[in-house]
Each structure stands twice: as structure tokens, then as C-alpha cells.
Image 1 (tube, rainbow over the protein chains, first blue to last red):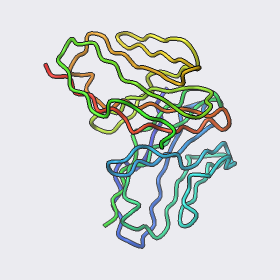
Image 2: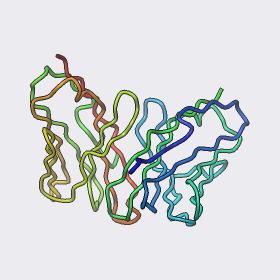
Image 3: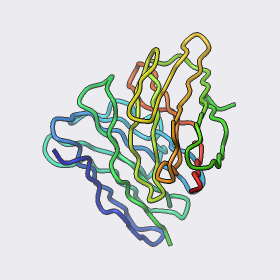
Image 4: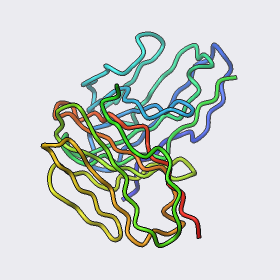
Length: 113
Length: 109
């Protein structure tokens, strides 16, 4: 059973471009969480999704950020018009049910030039 | 004040020493998680506990719900234990995690 997969592992964008980060949860997991780790800071919750539904997006910046978890395919975190402050490591985690241990992906390191 | 506080922030010890990392929280929780973040950045879930004590190999995690405090212990520490250890709590709603700032552990051979 493959673990949580994220791609790309490293992503470089120029200011104003779009960034798309993908997360494939473990097989059988229908709950996906996205977290962000800014340089020299702790992890922060961004959004919680189940298949086709956003359950909690209280940690998402109000503008430029969106997330989806379609019926088929990976979960996508999309950042439009990236700025230097978006440079961070973005981790997704998945779990098979709500009150269960979360399994983390390797992260995507976004660098905005 | 952060909802999850860890101490110490940094810890350096000799190989073989007994290690204790502490975590205090100020909110109601459904569970407390201990995570390990390797130097390469990957995150591994070590424990999820809501009461009592759990043990896995040389790692032991305890939680005191009344005192809102948890400890992570490492027995017979080894240089490969060098990592950042992160305490996180889930709130019983959507189970999103709120994280402490982490404890950077360095074990010297």
C-alpha cells in the first residue's frame, strides 16, 4: 500500500504565476488535510476535504488559494498569482476516517522568485 | 499565547541518554499526536493518544488529560533519533491539527 504521494516535490514559480500542488491519499483514505509550513515556522492547518466536499477551509487565505478533492483523481491545492510570501513547504495528510491517525505526504516545497 | 506549547525548543544529548520532551495545551482536545520531522523534511506520525500511555520500541508517549500535558520519552537515544519532534492536538470536530512549534533534538555519538 503506497503512502501518501505529493507532486511535484519541488516547484519554482515566478511572482504572478499559478502553482498547482497535487496530493494522492493512501488507498482507502477519503479524508485529506492540507498544511503549510512557512520557513522557520510551525505547521498550520489550511483546509480539510472529503471526496467532492470542502469540510473546513478556515485556515485558507481568503484570496488566491483554493482546494478541491474530486471524485476521481488527486486533491489539488491551487495558488493563483503567487507572491514571495507563498514560499513554503505544503504537506498533505490523509486518513481513512475522521478520528484516526493522519498519514503525511513528503511535502511540496514551493519557491517563488 | 499559543494553544500548544512545547519545551524545550532545542535539546542536545549524548547517545544513550533518556530524553523527555514536554507538551502543554490550553484547549479541549479529542486526541494528541506526536510527530517526527526528519532533517529532509518528511513527517511521520509517531503516536495518537487520548488517554494514558503508549509505547512503540524505544518511544513512550503519555498524556494527562486533567493537567492538559503530554510527554514524549526516548530511551537509549541514538543519533538517528535526531529530528524535530512536534506535538499536535485535534479538536474533536473536523480533526484538523493544531501544532506546537517543535523540539529540535540532536543526539551526539
